[in-house]
Structure formats: structure tokens, C-alpha cells
Length: 244
Image 1 (tube, rainbow, N blue to C red):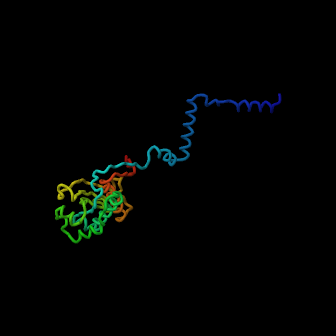
Image 2 (cartoon, helix red, strand yellow):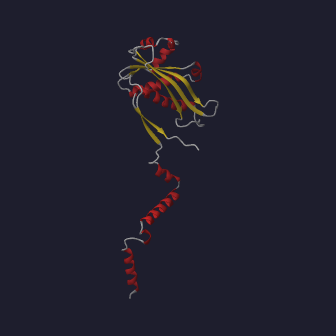
């Protein structure tokens, strides 16, 4: 018999086999696939593991937040920010910056309302240094608005307490709403407290930062949560790092 013809016949016979010897059982096929996957991950490194795990554990989480109070719709609004002398001595722009941030959020997200210009609000406060002693009903009339969102800054800092080398932004504010058409315009119709930290998902300070960037981050988060009390919205947050 011709040797070349025999070799050719053997090759054709092997090529027409439906299964190879190592894949005749499901258990073998699964084992081979698993081994190939492990070898691929080991050769690609950590980036491949992260790429595969991203759809299962995304870096961001989304939350739908419902408004706690809808009474600012179709109203004229003024945002007043109160701070003690010590806070204003350390952070002279705290009042106007928080007022701008919260006013901007309200104007952007409650289309049916009009929000008083923050410059006019702070001008009124500067011209009336004892404005906080005026009865709320009279304050509303003086500002010529339907509602006032009053924010009392309880905490305001850009550095971690007791550590001059670590930056950590923190704002805590008591937030109350007074309205001209309330049964008692001299009392709050809504009241709560908002606490905002920057960086948001960290409980420790950071080294590489500056005062301006910290205040910007603080105001962004605080205004989101403070103004968000009055309209439905979505919040996107990064997942917290797990420290072992």
C-alpha cells in the first residue's frame, strides 16, 4: 500500500471525528474552559479582573431621592444663610457661597418658582445686621417673597479638626422654611438638618488639596442635599472603599 495514501486517509479520518478524546464528557469541557480562563486572567493581570468585575460591581450607585417638602413650587423664594462670627472670621465668603449654591439649585430644578438674586439677599443682610432678630413674618415682607429658606450654618470647615495637614470639608446646616401664607408665618413650616462631607465617601482627610477646591466640593454636595429637600431628584455616589 502507498504510504502517502495511508497518511492521507488517517488525516481525513481524524478530521471527521465529531469529538476529540479530551472533550467527550461535559465535565472535561468545563474543566478545560476554566483552565483557559484562569490562564488568560493571569497573563492579562489585574486590569482584566477589574474589567470583568465592573458590570457586576459598578463604581457608582444611583439613588432616587423624593422631596421632603413640595411647598416651594409656584412661589417666590429667598435663601438666607446665617453664620456665627467665628465662622465668618475664618471663612468670610461662607454666607454668600452657600447662598449662591443653594439658590442656583432651586432655580434650576423648580421651574415654577422664582429665586431672589443672592447678591440682593446678602446686601439686605449687610444693611440690616440684626435681621435675625426680626420676626419671620416681617422678614418675609421685607424681602417681598412668598417663602424664605433659612439656613443656619452649625459646622463649616475645610480642614480636619486638630490636623493642619489634612483637608476635609464639612458643612452642617439647620434648614427651615417660613411662608407668608402659613397659619403662623412666624414659625417654621418645615425644618430639618443637612450634613455634607467632602470627599463624600471618605471619613478621613486628604493631603493634596487647597481651600478653594475643598469649598467648591463642600458647596456642591451641601447644595445638592439641601436644595434637594424640595424636589425629586437622582443622586449618583461612588461606592465606599472597604478598609480592612
